[in-house]
Structure formats: C-alpha cells, structure tokens
Length: 211
Image 1 (cartoon, rainbow, N blue to C red):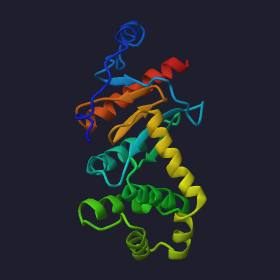
Image 2 (tube, rainbow, N blue to C red; image 1 turned 120 degrees about the vertical axis):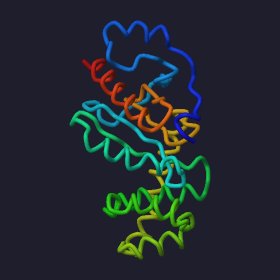
Image 3 (tube, rainbow, N blue to C red; image 1 turned 60 degrees about the vertical axis):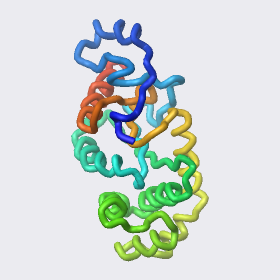
C-alpha cells in the first residue's frame, strides 16, 4: 500500500497551530503531513532522532522506495538514525522474508544483497518466500549455506521477527512502506519523494522539541 493510499487519523490540529509560531519552517499539518502516534513509542537511542521504516521485501511499493530511501539515508546528519523493521502481517511467506532480512544482517550480507532481493522478487519473480528456495538463492549469491540456515532458524532471528510485528501493532501499521519519526509522527505524503521531504521536516521538528 502506497503512502497516498493510506488513510490518516484526523486530529491534533490545535497542537499543530500552536507549534506553527515557533516552528514556521517545519511540517505543521496534522492529518496531512503527519499523523500523531498515540501513545508515543519508545526509541532505542535517546541521544539521536529515530526514523523507523516498516517494510516487507514482498511489497512492490517498498521496492520502489528502497533506492530513494538509501540515497536519503546517506545524506542524514549524525544525530539521526534509521531503523528498518520488516513486518509480516501474519503471513507465513512474509515471515520468511522478514527472517531473511535479519539473517543477512547478522551474516554481514545485507548491504550487498538487499537491492538484489527486491529485484529478485519483483523483477525476476524468484520464489524467496519458502525456506528451501530462498536458502538455495542466497547460496547462489555467495552466502555460506550452513551459517545462513543456522542463523535463519535461530531463536535470535525469530525473536527479532516477533518484535517487529509487536512494533507494527504498537504503531498501528496497516500498510507498508510506512515511516515514523521519533516514535511520535507517522509520515504522510502523496508519493515517496514527498514522504521523504516531510520526514526531513519532522526530523527538524523533533530536533527542536528535544532542545
């Protein structure tokens, strides 16, 4: 589901108006530019501003966003950190590709293979949703098969997948890709480029609030 198709809760207009005098250059329109997250969710590093991307390799809109997001991340200042959270929506196939993400992260192959994973699924129509098939695929890409299989089925990876789904429920995620800033704001926008521009404004807003 794209950013344009997700519906946002209308609210917090009074708060947005109050902030407009002190934060004139930042995203101000609750319900259009962003949706307040209620309750506010904790972040991992209180010293930095956290952006979370909820996504799935199985989502074509996430595939479209990925190169734009990667280029955007490369330009971020040091006080901003981005967390990627693959979620399953209770689908067994998406659980396997969520496990794929965390396994590649642990084996050190994520940066090299993530763009290839998106291409394999959405351009080459490769079956990466079943364990046997996706294991054969990663081995063909130079990943150690034994290490991959052990990590893929480990308690640590399963815990990360469960934690991602718990986060998605806490953030009330109904579609991906979805971006959240500082556990406070779900990003709006009619397309990916606008969503990233709004995210920049919300980062500035969160930075001002921390001060």
